[in-house]
Amino acid sequence: MANSIGKLFTLTTFGESHGIALGGIIDGCPSNINIDFDFIQNELDRRKPGQSKIVTQRKEADEVKFLSGIFEGKTTGTSIGFIIENGNQKSNDYDHLKDTFRPSHADFTYDKKYGNRDYRGGGRTSARETVNWVVAGAIAKQIIPEIKINAFVSSVGEISINKPYQDLDFNLIESNPVRCPDLEKASEMEEYILKIKKEGDTVGGTVTCVIQNVPIGLGEPVFDKLHAQLGKAMLSINAVKGFEYGGGFCASKMKGSDHNDLFNEDGTTKSNLSGGIQGGISNGMDIYFRVAFKPVATLLQKQDVLTNDGKIVEQQGKGRHDPCVVPRAVPIVEALAAMVLVDFTLMDKASK
Image 1 (cartoon, rainbow, N blue to C red):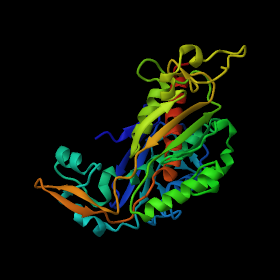
Image 2 (cartoon, rainbow, N blue to C red; image 1 turned 90 degrees about the horizontal axis):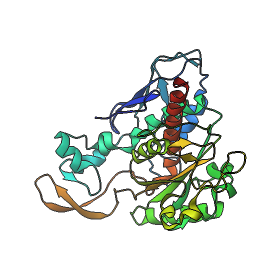
Image 3 (tube, rainbow, N blue to C red; image 1 turned 135 degrees about the vertical axis):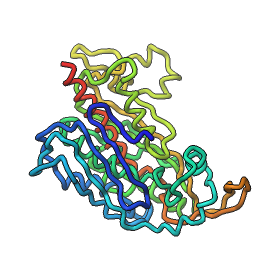
């Protein structure tokens, strides 16, 4: 299984949703980086379950324990090993899934591929795996503190922010449980998520990410384009169905005379419909992209499922699940973006 991401700054992870612990090994982290442990824990707190009434009520401290690679508060340049222990599993909630395949889950494909699967909370396929990514992303952010990464919820269902990101105050992202910097829309989104939750249903949405102060020159043609690796990272997140950057899919409806990024005398561009990337290489402008998340597949409603012996039976979802994943996905998007940018930063330095 492909359990690693990155070329020079790499993260390899392990663990299951209902196992003893999750964890990872970070290789390629430069030495003598001062590590702010409180910052790492704060990033984990942004992702962890049970933080508000609109997310899963599983209660996990999500406290990371570092096993190696950090001495007296600084990285040593060797492998950074860490674990996050699980503490609030309710495995019995999943006994009814032992012999059935839920729609839109990985139950069927994992079973057919490996012949043995951990059905408790989805095992390795669970989004709980992303706790490892947030740890590595928090360290990555501290390697490149000059680069600012801000992600936020830009839509839930049909409710969308109708403002350009330049008109938003990123300081408001953490002021509400939806993590939307448009407070009026945030209130509408929260109300809608609670309504959906009451119905035992789920809803999707989008997360927008803005990366600022990116130096010119990050990205490697042909198959290591910066946007390609950002896209791969984002499409690795559970429930993600789409990725677009810059003009995105709207660009397909435009004429070249409207879409072309004309240059200013100082090398900046007028519209930045390129999304800060041209030819797969950063051009110094803001990088911005949007990630689309599907509705959570586990419904607290009755629906048809397939059994191991090929029968269709009715089953109702149990356990603690997010009615909408996008609020908790915000720090995950940031973490993966940070890891990609650190990787390209190290590649850029190695090539000079």
